[in-house]
Image (tube, rainbow, N blue to C red):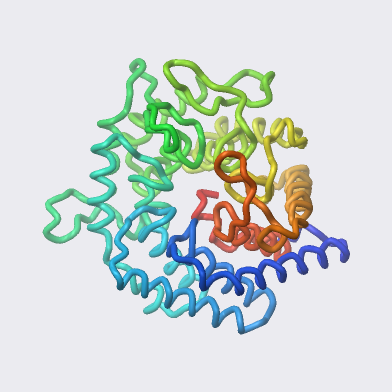
Length: 410
């Protein structure tokens, strides 16, 4: 796909270039303090930024920093780090290494240095499913984050594992834990990560859309119609049954269903809300060849693009997870897929808002991010900090999505 830069005005380009430089400096001063090795919360994400910024700026200093960060990650692992999750553990770290190899930033031997962990990931996923937890970021589904991972794993069982293969296990477990409302409608419950209660979660990061998106990727690769008929279509019916005809209370979809009651309206974000859900629906429709699902997703995204104020969106910082750069990324991605020009304008709006947030002298590279208890703090990581902001700004300037966004299901 050809390059599609968001900005042509020299003053705006210069502002973004300067902000990327500020973020690069901030991360180079900070990374040695980071103890977490993960993709979304620590060193793996930072290494990804350094390699991309090196290519963007032509400064080999940052390539060297990227390598140094990878060495730090390996050192943490050698000391006994074994957490398997995608967001903060070995699944995401392994994915990052593979991605950096695909980009040509590191050698194939270096990229594959953590391969061979499939049995650990399968055991982790099986354990999480037993507890009824499927969460993409932190639980079972993070072991197969992308189509490439699904193709690599396939349905071949690990030697001496006694299983039928990871993909079969995931399908069987999602079938087992599904809640049947009638013969045509199913859903899944999960545990609220912060408060511990059971819910049906509608967010892309932790809920139903991520299940259906991953199932659609498996279906696309395997062509197994039973996955479509028994899981995807009944799950999509549940999702659409809870979509409003018009977003009179700002959002088409609720945040969650708790004790039978839908909580709405939802914020606008990658993690929760209509943009992330519609992004998933569009991909599911593409994977399952359902044009009506894709058209519905476009309708939702068009409606959400008119929500721009802080009151209507809940956007109060620049992060990918729940902030402006996440919305810029979503709308830029769907603009490239659909060719719908107004989505580029929405992506431009949220990119400029991302710049506007970066003017706090108390922040990390000018940014403060909303954390627990509504406190605004510096944050350097990928999902909720300046690493993700920097990678997004580089992508908007370069006019392409290189592939790290697939680690967000974008």
